[in-house]
Each structure stands twice: as C-alpha cells, then as structure tokens.
Length: 376
Image (cartoon, rainbow, N blue to C red; front, side):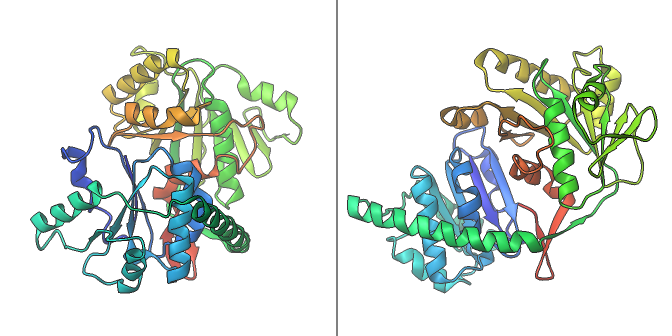
C-alpha cells in the first residue's frame, strides 16, 4: 500500500504498480495531489493516521517548505511511523535544494527519469526506491533529540494550521452530488456517518440535505430526542443549516446525503441497488469485528455486481494493529478503505473530517492564495 503526495502533472506515475510483481498484490495506491504541498502541515495533521501504509511517496516538485522545515517534517513522519518506507520523486532534477537535504540521510535514491522518455530507466529507479530503506539516526540521545524536534515542529505547525484554517475557502464544483450511505449489516453506523457528513459539509460552506430513504423511522426518533429541529412540512425539517427530508430528493443543493440504512439487503433490493449505482459516491459502513468481515465482503460483491464500481468502505472500532490487515484485505483499485473515529455526537462536524475530505475530494477544492488545490 502506498500513499502518494504528488503534483497534478505526476499523478499517474505509479499506476502500473497495480499489476507489478515488485509489490505485494493487490496493491492499494492512494493519491493526494496539489500544486503546493506543505509537508510540515501534513506531518502534523496526517502522520499518525497513515501508519497502515507501507510506502510514502513524495513528489518534491510540489513541496513548498524550505530545507530545514522539509527535513524536520521527514523526521517527524519517521518518528511517528518508523516502519514506513519513503520514496522521493523529482522528475527532471528540478529540486536540487531538497535533494541536498536528502543526502544528509545517506545515499537516498531519487526517481528523476521521465517515464515518457525512458520507461525502463524509470522503472529501474522505482525498483531501487522500493528496495531502499532510509537510514535515520538511531542512538538513544539522537532519538530523544528528534522527539524534541518533532514536538517543537508539531507545536509550530499547529499554530500555523489554526491561522490557515480560519481563512480557508472552498469551491463546490457540482450541484446535487448524490451520496449513498449503506450499511453492510444492521447497526453498522450508516445513519450516524451520514449525518456527520452532512454536518461537516455544512460547516465548510456547502449547501447540503440529508435524506432518509429507509422506513426505520430514525429521523423521527432523532427529532424527538434532539433540540433545534424546525418542521417546514411533514417531510422536511431544518437544523443548523442542514435540511432533512423523509424519502424526498431535493433540488438545488451541492450535496444530497442519502441514508440507506437496511435498504439494501440482497438481490431482491434491485431498485435500491440501481439507485446506489447512479449515485456519485457510494459509502459502505461496517466495523472490524472478525465475525462481520464476511458480510462486508458479500455486500461489496453485491454492490459491484449491480454496477457500483467505486466503493468507499468506512470501518469503525478498528484497533491500530488491525488497520494494515483490513486495508490489504478489502482495498484495491475499486474499493478505498477508511477508518473512522467513534462519534457519540452524530452532529459532530470535525471528528471524521479528514475521512470526509478524502472521500469527497473530487467534488471540493480549497482556495489557497488564489491557487486551486485539491482538498486533502
């Protein structure tokens, strides 16, 4: 499994690894593309959450940090993920300053060959990168010093991040993006996750509606136990900027989050399967309990049989030690695996914001210094 932080121009460099014997198959490749990669901000925000990846590939051409901050970010990521292997990309040798920084870690391979000019040489460099283990300082004193560096860097990044967060603006490129949120089995968390997602989207400025498509009566129970709901009609309710519907698909909003809890059971749910197939995004909810994994597998196969070719699997209650195994078990080019945090408050907008950002990144862009950058 590889996480690739890349520029838009180099986004497809590692796609061929999906069919290569150089890596274990099935191979999961996750890409985050941008025009300006702040590796320090990434280290602060994401470093702990990527520990189930085997490789972290970094396109140096998109890194905006200076030499010192870049080095500290690499060290911080390593401290929090000592088993992860780094790959560095600099097609055309355009970032000599950052390459000089890498030399302080040893004879670190850097992928510089353009595959369009010489695919054989490019693959040779990739092979060297995959097989290389970057050496980091390992004495006790040096580890302590690095821990202090990481702590100080994280504190500084945290302050900068708060300043940037207050200024963030988002562009929503589409109207009526349809999201289907489906349970793999009963009580797998589709209602909670779907309402969480609606609250998150509303918090970043999107217009969003949540729709109950099941006959479970969850919305009535939520309204009766939660203050703040206003009834507009018998089937339409509003709360803190989000509009909630019973079985009615609204128009003129950026996102429609469809709660399909227990709507799809088996092949007899053909109408619901057709509806899910036609949605822009399909999210399947489950947990990581061993006796439920087979049901998740069967539901994925059912959705794929009826035309859902891109599935976002969201797993809750997952121990850290199990994440790599589960990502390997289910993850492939058709299924992306995410691990969401427990949310007793279903209206919490920020608990799983990073998961939502990744799932929705095709439909949201973040405006930063007048540059349009794909949302992490």
